[in-house]
Image (cartoon, helix red, strand yellow):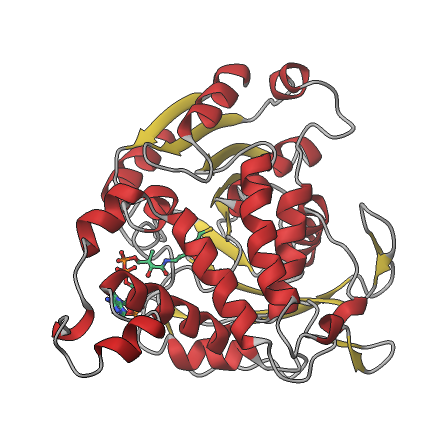
Length: 385
Ligand code: COA
Protein backbone atom coordinates (compact mmCIF):
# COMPACT_ATOMS: atom_id res chain seq x y z
CA UNK A 1 0.00 0.00 0.00
CA UNK A 2 1.26 3.47 -0.89
CA UNK A 3 1.10 6.06 1.88
CA UNK A 4 0.39 9.41 0.26
CA UNK A 5 1.43 12.81 1.50
CA UNK A 6 0.87 16.25 0.03
CA UNK A 7 3.96 18.43 -0.36
CA UNK A 8 3.98 22.18 -0.97
CA UNK A 9 6.26 24.54 -2.82
CA UNK A 10 6.11 28.30 -3.36
CA UNK A 11 6.58 29.29 -6.99
CA UNK A 12 6.77 32.60 -8.84
CA UNK A 13 8.38 34.42 -5.93
CA UNK A 14 10.93 36.38 -7.98
CA UNK A 15 8.95 36.91 -11.15
CA UNK A 16 5.21 36.74 -11.85
CA UNK A 17 3.12 34.34 -13.85
CA UNK A 18 1.82 36.44 -16.76
CA UNK A 19 -1.71 35.21 -17.19
CA UNK A 20 -3.09 34.41 -20.62
CA UNK A 21 -6.12 36.66 -20.25
CA UNK A 22 -4.29 39.50 -18.54
CA UNK A 23 -2.92 40.22 -15.11
CA UNK A 24 -0.12 38.65 -13.12
CA UNK A 25 0.09 36.30 -10.17
CA UNK A 26 2.98 36.25 -7.70
CA UNK A 27 3.64 33.76 -4.91
CA UNK A 28 1.81 30.74 -6.20
CA UNK A 29 1.75 27.95 -3.69
CA UNK A 30 1.49 24.56 -5.32
CA UNK A 31 0.48 21.30 -3.64
CA UNK A 32 1.57 18.03 -5.17
CA UNK A 33 2.06 14.37 -4.41
CA UNK A 34 4.66 11.99 -5.79
CA UNK A 35 4.82 8.22 -5.93
CA UNK A 36 7.84 6.08 -6.87
CA UNK A 37 11.45 7.25 -7.27
CA UNK A 38 13.09 9.61 -9.75
CA UNK A 39 15.86 7.75 -11.62
CA UNK A 40 19.33 9.21 -12.13
CA UNK A 41 18.72 9.95 -15.84
CA UNK A 42 15.47 11.75 -15.01
CA UNK A 43 13.79 9.65 -17.68
CA UNK A 44 10.95 8.09 -15.71
CA UNK A 45 8.73 11.05 -14.81
CA UNK A 46 5.01 10.81 -15.44
CA UNK A 47 2.79 13.83 -14.86
CA UNK A 48 -0.76 13.04 -13.79
CA UNK A 49 -3.25 15.88 -14.33
CA UNK A 50 -6.51 15.98 -12.41
CA UNK A 51 -10.00 17.08 -13.42
CA UNK A 52 -12.29 19.87 -12.13
CA UNK A 53 -12.85 18.89 -8.50
CA UNK A 54 -9.88 16.51 -8.25
CA UNK A 55 -6.66 17.05 -6.35
CA UNK A 56 -3.10 15.87 -5.86
CA UNK A 57 -4.18 12.73 -4.04
CA UNK A 58 -4.15 10.44 -7.08
CA UNK A 59 -2.96 7.25 -5.39
CA UNK A 60 -2.49 5.52 -2.06
CA UNK A 61 -4.00 6.38 1.27
CA UNK A 62 -3.22 9.65 3.05
CA UNK A 63 -0.66 8.98 5.77
CA UNK A 64 -2.03 11.67 8.06
CA UNK A 65 -4.58 14.45 8.26
CA UNK A 66 -3.51 17.35 6.05
CA UNK A 67 -4.23 21.01 6.17
CA UNK A 68 -3.65 24.26 4.27
CA UNK A 69 -3.64 27.28 6.56
CA UNK A 70 -3.40 29.62 3.55
CA UNK A 71 -6.90 28.62 2.41
CA UNK A 72 -9.73 30.50 4.13
CA UNK A 73 -11.90 27.38 4.29
CA UNK A 74 -9.01 24.89 4.71
CA UNK A 75 -10.62 22.52 2.25
CA UNK A 76 -7.56 20.30 2.18
CA UNK A 77 -8.26 19.48 5.79
CA UNK A 78 -11.93 18.77 5.02
CA UNK A 79 -10.96 16.58 2.07
CA UNK A 80 -8.41 14.64 4.10
CA UNK A 81 -11.01 13.97 6.82
CA UNK A 82 -13.51 12.72 4.24
CA UNK A 83 -11.00 10.59 2.38
CA UNK A 84 -9.60 8.94 5.50
CA UNK A 85 -8.64 5.37 4.58
CA UNK A 86 -9.82 5.81 0.97
CA UNK A 87 -7.40 5.47 -1.93
CA UNK A 88 -6.67 8.35 -4.32
CA UNK A 89 -8.81 8.93 -7.38
CA UNK A 90 -6.51 7.07 -9.81
CA UNK A 91 -5.26 4.42 -7.42
CA UNK A 92 -6.64 1.82 -9.83
CA UNK A 93 -3.87 2.56 -12.33
CA UNK A 94 -1.06 3.91 -10.12
CA UNK A 95 1.00 1.60 -7.93
CA UNK A 96 3.32 -1.40 -8.03
CA UNK A 97 2.45 -3.64 -10.99
CA UNK A 98 -0.22 -1.25 -12.33
CA UNK A 99 0.07 0.66 -15.62
CA UNK A 100 1.66 3.67 -13.91
CA UNK A 101 4.01 1.33 -12.08
CA UNK A 102 5.61 3.03 -9.10
CA UNK A 103 8.50 0.51 -9.21
CA UNK A 104 9.37 1.96 -12.59
CA UNK A 105 8.05 5.50 -12.85
CA UNK A 106 8.21 8.64 -10.75
CA UNK A 107 4.66 9.95 -10.74
CA UNK A 108 3.95 13.61 -9.99
CA UNK A 109 0.39 14.84 -9.45
CA UNK A 110 0.02 18.57 -8.78
CA UNK A 111 -3.14 20.26 -7.54
CA UNK A 112 -3.98 22.84 -10.22
CA UNK A 113 -3.90 26.62 -10.04
CA UNK A 114 -7.36 27.90 -9.07
CA UNK A 115 -8.23 24.83 -7.03
CA UNK A 116 -8.66 24.68 -3.25
CA UNK A 117 -6.51 21.76 -2.12
CA UNK A 118 -3.24 23.45 -1.25
CA UNK A 119 -2.57 25.30 -4.50
CA UNK A 120 -3.30 29.02 -4.79
CA UNK A 121 -6.91 29.66 -5.75
CA UNK A 122 -9.78 32.05 -4.98
CA UNK A 123 -10.10 30.83 -1.37
CA UNK A 124 -6.38 31.44 -0.71
CA UNK A 125 -5.11 34.39 1.19
CA UNK A 126 -3.42 36.83 -1.16
CA UNK A 127 -0.03 37.39 0.43
CA UNK A 128 0.16 40.91 -0.95
CA UNK A 129 -3.08 42.09 0.67
CA UNK A 130 -3.44 39.48 3.45
CA UNK A 131 -7.06 39.12 2.31
CA UNK A 132 -8.86 36.22 0.64
CA UNK A 133 -8.81 36.59 -3.15
CA UNK A 134 -12.54 35.80 -3.52
CA UNK A 135 -13.91 37.60 -6.56
CA UNK A 136 -10.57 39.33 -7.17
CA UNK A 137 -8.95 36.07 -8.25
CA UNK A 138 -7.97 36.59 -11.89
CA UNK A 139 -9.31 34.68 -14.89
CA UNK A 140 -7.04 31.70 -15.41
CA UNK A 141 -6.58 29.37 -18.36
CA UNK A 142 -5.43 25.81 -18.97
CA UNK A 143 -2.20 27.33 -20.33
CA UNK A 144 -1.64 29.16 -17.02
CA UNK A 145 -2.23 25.92 -15.12
CA UNK A 146 0.34 24.13 -17.27
CA UNK A 147 2.88 26.94 -16.82
CA UNK A 148 2.62 26.50 -13.05
CA UNK A 149 3.20 22.76 -13.47
CA UNK A 150 6.29 23.50 -15.60
CA UNK A 151 7.62 25.73 -12.84
CA UNK A 152 6.94 23.00 -10.30
CA UNK A 153 9.20 20.65 -12.28
CA UNK A 154 11.93 23.30 -12.39
CA UNK A 155 11.74 23.61 -8.61
CA UNK A 156 12.01 19.81 -8.32
CA UNK A 157 15.11 19.81 -10.54
CA UNK A 158 13.30 17.84 -13.26
CA UNK A 159 14.24 18.88 -16.78
CA UNK A 160 12.07 16.50 -18.82
CA UNK A 161 9.03 14.35 -18.41
CA UNK A 162 8.42 11.06 -20.08
CA UNK A 163 4.64 11.23 -20.21
CA UNK A 164 1.66 13.33 -19.20
CA UNK A 165 -1.74 11.76 -18.65
CA UNK A 166 -5.09 13.10 -17.51
CA UNK A 167 -8.83 12.70 -17.95
CA UNK A 168 -11.43 15.35 -18.77
CA UNK A 169 -9.92 18.73 -17.86
CA UNK A 170 -6.75 16.78 -17.02
CA UNK A 171 -6.65 15.76 -20.69
CA UNK A 172 -6.84 19.42 -21.73
CA UNK A 173 -3.73 20.14 -19.66
CA UNK A 174 -1.98 17.18 -21.29
CA UNK A 175 -2.81 18.43 -24.79
CA UNK A 176 -1.60 21.91 -23.87
CA UNK A 177 1.69 20.42 -22.61
CA UNK A 178 2.41 18.90 -26.01
CA UNK A 179 2.34 22.31 -27.70
CA UNK A 180 3.59 24.60 -24.95
CA UNK A 181 6.64 22.54 -23.99
CA UNK A 182 7.26 20.09 -26.86
CA UNK A 183 10.96 19.70 -26.01
CA UNK A 184 10.20 18.84 -22.40
CA UNK A 185 7.81 15.95 -22.95
CA UNK A 186 7.95 12.64 -24.79
CA UNK A 187 4.39 11.34 -24.81
CA UNK A 188 0.86 12.41 -23.94
CA UNK A 189 -2.27 10.47 -23.06
CA UNK A 190 -5.40 12.64 -23.14
CA UNK A 191 -8.43 10.71 -21.86
CA UNK A 192 -12.15 11.53 -22.22
CA UNK A 193 -11.45 15.08 -23.29
CA UNK A 194 -11.56 17.53 -26.18
CA UNK A 195 -9.26 20.01 -27.90
CA UNK A 196 -11.76 22.78 -27.17
CA UNK A 197 -14.78 23.00 -24.95
CA UNK A 198 -17.87 22.65 -27.12
CA UNK A 199 -21.05 24.75 -27.04
CA UNK A 200 -22.76 21.74 -25.42
CA UNK A 201 -20.21 21.55 -22.60
CA UNK A 202 -20.24 25.34 -22.15
CA UNK A 203 -24.05 25.17 -21.87
CA UNK A 204 -23.87 22.56 -19.11
CA UNK A 205 -21.29 24.65 -17.27
CA UNK A 206 -23.52 27.72 -17.60
CA UNK A 207 -26.34 25.99 -15.74
CA UNK A 208 -23.92 24.94 -12.97
CA UNK A 209 -22.30 28.36 -12.73
CA UNK A 210 -25.61 30.19 -12.56
CA UNK A 211 -26.73 27.90 -9.76
CA UNK A 212 -23.70 29.07 -7.74
CA UNK A 213 -24.01 32.75 -8.63
CA UNK A 214 -27.70 32.83 -7.72
CA UNK A 215 -27.17 31.38 -4.25
CA UNK A 216 -28.35 33.96 -1.68
CA UNK A 217 -25.00 33.98 0.16
CA UNK A 218 -22.81 34.16 -2.95
CA UNK A 219 -22.36 37.94 -2.63
CA UNK A 220 -20.61 38.31 -5.99
CA UNK A 221 -17.99 35.82 -4.90
CA UNK A 222 -17.12 37.58 -1.64
CA UNK A 223 -18.85 35.13 0.69
CA UNK A 224 -17.76 34.17 4.19
CA UNK A 225 -19.64 30.87 4.20
CA UNK A 226 -19.85 28.61 1.16
CA UNK A 227 -22.89 29.14 -1.10
CA UNK A 228 -23.83 25.55 -0.42
CA UNK A 229 -27.21 25.35 -2.15
CA UNK A 230 -25.76 26.72 -5.37
CA UNK A 231 -22.71 24.49 -5.29
CA UNK A 232 -24.89 21.46 -4.56
CA UNK A 233 -27.04 22.17 -7.59
CA UNK A 234 -23.97 22.79 -9.75
CA UNK A 235 -22.66 19.35 -8.81
CA UNK A 236 -26.01 17.70 -9.53
CA UNK A 237 -26.11 19.25 -12.99
CA UNK A 238 -22.54 18.15 -13.65
CA UNK A 239 -23.09 14.62 -12.32
CA UNK A 240 -25.84 14.08 -14.90
CA UNK A 241 -23.37 14.83 -17.68
CA UNK A 242 -20.71 12.59 -16.09
CA UNK A 243 -22.80 9.44 -16.54
CA UNK A 244 -25.21 8.20 -19.20
CA UNK A 245 -28.90 7.39 -19.50
CA UNK A 246 -28.01 3.69 -19.77
CA UNK A 247 -26.01 3.65 -16.53
CA UNK A 248 -28.51 5.67 -14.48
CA UNK A 249 -31.46 3.65 -15.80
CA UNK A 250 -29.67 0.36 -15.17
CA UNK A 251 -28.50 1.29 -11.67
CA UNK A 252 -31.53 3.12 -10.30
CA UNK A 253 -34.41 2.25 -12.62
CA UNK A 254 -37.53 3.82 -11.03
CA UNK A 255 -36.69 2.44 -7.61
CA UNK A 256 -37.72 4.34 -4.52
CA UNK A 257 -35.10 5.09 -1.89
CA UNK A 258 -35.02 3.07 1.34
CA UNK A 259 -38.04 0.88 0.74
CA UNK A 260 -40.37 3.89 0.50
CA UNK A 261 -43.65 3.18 -1.31
CA UNK A 262 -46.73 5.09 -2.45
CA UNK A 263 -48.49 4.28 0.86
CA UNK A 264 -45.62 5.41 3.12
CA UNK A 265 -46.71 8.18 5.51
CA UNK A 266 -43.78 10.39 4.47
CA UNK A 267 -44.43 9.92 0.73
CA UNK A 268 -46.06 13.32 0.12
CA UNK A 269 -43.33 15.20 1.96
CA UNK A 270 -40.58 13.28 0.16
CA UNK A 271 -41.98 13.81 -3.32
CA UNK A 272 -42.02 17.54 -2.62
CA UNK A 273 -38.48 17.33 -1.22
CA UNK A 274 -37.31 15.56 -4.38
CA UNK A 275 -36.10 12.59 -2.39
CA UNK A 276 -38.42 9.74 -3.31
CA UNK A 277 -36.46 8.10 -6.11
CA UNK A 278 -33.10 6.38 -5.60
CA UNK A 279 -31.62 8.50 -8.40
CA UNK A 280 -32.78 11.64 -6.58
CA UNK A 281 -31.24 10.39 -3.36
CA UNK A 282 -27.98 9.59 -5.19
CA UNK A 283 -27.69 13.01 -6.81
CA UNK A 284 -28.73 14.83 -3.63
CA UNK A 285 -26.01 12.91 -1.81
CA UNK A 286 -23.41 13.84 -4.44
CA UNK A 287 -24.43 17.49 -4.07
CA UNK A 288 -24.23 17.37 -0.27
CA UNK A 289 -20.82 15.72 -0.48
CA UNK A 290 -19.21 18.34 -2.72
CA UNK A 291 -20.13 21.26 -0.47
CA UNK A 292 -18.22 19.66 2.39
CA UNK A 293 -15.00 19.63 0.37
CA UNK A 294 -14.97 22.22 -2.43
CA UNK A 295 -14.93 25.97 -2.88
CA UNK A 296 -17.60 27.61 -5.05
CA UNK A 297 -15.23 30.26 -6.45
CA UNK A 298 -12.75 27.53 -7.39
CA UNK A 299 -15.58 25.79 -9.20
CA UNK A 300 -16.26 28.97 -11.15
CA UNK A 301 -12.60 29.75 -11.87
CA UNK A 302 -11.88 26.25 -13.13
CA UNK A 303 -15.05 25.92 -15.20
CA UNK A 304 -14.16 29.27 -16.78
CA UNK A 305 -10.73 27.85 -17.66
CA UNK A 306 -12.45 24.80 -19.19
CA UNK A 307 -14.90 26.92 -21.17
CA UNK A 308 -12.09 29.13 -22.46
CA UNK A 309 -9.98 26.15 -23.49
CA UNK A 310 -9.25 26.01 -27.20
CA UNK A 311 -5.98 24.32 -28.07
CA UNK A 312 -5.98 26.05 -31.45
CA UNK A 313 -6.36 29.62 -30.15
CA UNK A 314 -3.59 31.74 -31.62
CA UNK A 315 -2.02 28.69 -33.25
CA UNK A 316 -3.91 28.19 -36.51
CA UNK A 317 -6.64 25.93 -37.84
CA UNK A 318 -7.36 22.59 -36.20
CA UNK A 319 -5.59 20.43 -38.78
CA UNK A 320 -2.45 22.58 -38.79
CA UNK A 321 -2.31 22.69 -35.00
CA UNK A 322 -2.89 18.99 -34.43
CA UNK A 323 -0.48 17.97 -37.17
CA UNK A 324 2.23 20.00 -35.42
CA UNK A 325 2.07 17.81 -32.31
CA UNK A 326 5.32 15.87 -32.18
CA UNK A 327 4.84 13.84 -29.01
CA UNK A 328 3.91 10.15 -29.08
CA UNK A 329 0.19 10.25 -28.45
CA UNK A 330 -2.46 7.88 -27.17
CA UNK A 331 -5.99 9.32 -27.15
CA UNK A 332 -8.49 7.41 -25.04
CA UNK A 333 -12.20 8.02 -25.59
CA UNK A 334 -15.19 6.55 -23.77
CA UNK A 335 -17.95 4.87 -25.80
CA UNK A 336 -20.81 6.38 -23.73
CA UNK A 337 -19.33 9.82 -22.94
CA UNK A 338 -21.99 12.48 -23.56
CA UNK A 339 -19.80 15.34 -22.29
CA UNK A 340 -16.86 14.74 -24.62
CA UNK A 341 -18.17 12.26 -27.20
CA UNK A 342 -15.58 9.71 -28.37
CA UNK A 343 -16.02 10.70 -32.02
CA UNK A 344 -14.32 14.04 -31.29
CA UNK A 345 -11.25 12.46 -29.73
CA UNK A 346 -11.08 9.86 -32.50
CA UNK A 347 -11.00 12.66 -35.08
CA UNK A 348 -8.35 14.46 -33.01
CA UNK A 349 -6.18 11.32 -32.99
CA UNK A 350 -6.51 11.03 -36.75
CA UNK A 351 -4.93 14.47 -37.16
CA UNK A 352 -2.01 13.99 -34.74
CA UNK A 353 0.90 12.32 -36.54
CA UNK A 354 1.23 8.68 -35.47
CA UNK A 355 -1.37 8.99 -32.72
CA UNK A 356 -3.15 5.90 -31.49
CA UNK A 357 -6.84 5.97 -30.58
CA UNK A 358 -8.34 3.53 -28.07
CA UNK A 359 -11.84 3.46 -26.66
CA UNK A 360 -13.07 2.38 -23.25
CA UNK A 361 -16.24 0.38 -23.81
CA UNK A 362 -18.49 1.19 -20.90
CA UNK A 363 -22.00 2.32 -19.98
CA UNK A 364 -20.63 4.64 -17.25
CA UNK A 365 -20.23 7.69 -19.49
CA UNK A 366 -17.60 10.36 -18.92
CA UNK A 367 -16.81 9.03 -15.41
CA UNK A 368 -15.55 5.77 -16.95
CA UNK A 369 -12.00 7.12 -16.73
CA UNK A 370 -12.45 6.96 -12.93
CA UNK A 371 -14.06 3.52 -12.98
CA UNK A 372 -12.87 1.28 -15.84
CA UNK A 373 -9.39 0.60 -14.48
CA UNK A 374 -8.96 -2.82 -16.07
CA UNK A 375 -9.38 -1.44 -19.58
CA UNK A 376 -7.26 1.62 -18.81
CA UNK A 377 -4.44 -0.47 -17.31
CA UNK A 378 -4.29 -2.58 -20.46
CA UNK A 379 -4.29 0.40 -22.85
CA UNK A 380 -1.66 2.30 -20.90
CA UNK A 381 0.61 -0.70 -20.37
CA UNK A 382 0.57 -1.41 -24.11
CA UNK A 383 1.47 2.22 -24.87
CA UNK A 384 4.05 3.12 -22.22
CA UNK A 385 7.52 1.74 -22.73
N1 COA B 1 -28.57 7.35 -2.36
C1 COA B 1 -27.56 8.00 -1.75
N2 COA B 1 -26.24 7.73 -1.99
C2 COA B 1 -25.97 6.74 -2.87
C3 COA B 1 -26.98 6.03 -3.53
C4 COA B 1 -28.35 6.37 -3.25
N3 COA B 1 -29.36 5.74 -3.83
N4 COA B 1 -26.40 5.12 -4.35
C5 COA B 1 -25.06 5.27 -4.20
N5 COA B 1 -24.80 6.23 -3.30
C6 COA B 1 -23.50 6.72 -2.84
C7 COA B 1 -22.56 5.59 -2.52
O1 COA B 1 -22.82 5.09 -1.22
C8 COA B 1 -21.22 6.27 -2.65
O2 COA B 1 -20.96 6.99 -1.45
P1 COA B 1 -19.48 7.34 -0.99
O3 COA B 1 -18.82 8.11 -2.13
O4 COA B 1 -19.63 8.16 0.23
O5 COA B 1 -18.81 6.01 -0.76
C9 COA B 1 -21.43 7.30 -3.76
O6 COA B 1 -22.85 7.43 -3.90
C10 COA B 1 -20.75 6.95 -5.09
O7 COA B 1 -21.35 5.88 -5.61
P2 COA B 1 -21.23 5.57 -7.18
O8 COA B 1 -21.25 6.80 -8.00
O9 COA B 1 -22.29 4.55 -7.46
O10 COA B 1 -19.79 4.92 -7.27
P3 COA B 1 -19.04 4.43 -8.56
O11 COA B 1 -18.13 3.35 -8.14
O12 COA B 1 -19.99 4.15 -9.67
O13 COA B 1 -18.17 5.72 -9.01
C11 COA B 1 -16.72 7.53 -8.61
C12 COA B 1 -17.04 6.06 -8.34
C13 COA B 1 -15.45 7.88 -7.87
C14 COA B 1 -16.49 7.76 -10.10
C15 COA B 1 -17.91 8.40 -8.15
O14 COA B 1 -18.17 8.14 -6.81
C16 COA B 1 -17.67 9.89 -8.27
O15 COA B 1 -17.12 10.51 -7.38
N6 COA B 1 -18.10 10.49 -9.40
C17 COA B 1 -17.89 11.87 -9.68
C18 COA B 1 -16.49 12.03 -10.10
C19 COA B 1 -16.25 13.28 -10.85
O16 COA B 1 -16.06 14.33 -10.28
N7 COA B 1 -16.24 13.14 -12.16
C20 COA B 1 -16.02 14.24 -13.00
C21 COA B 1 -14.84 14.11 -13.78
S1 COA B 1 -14.66 15.56 -14.72
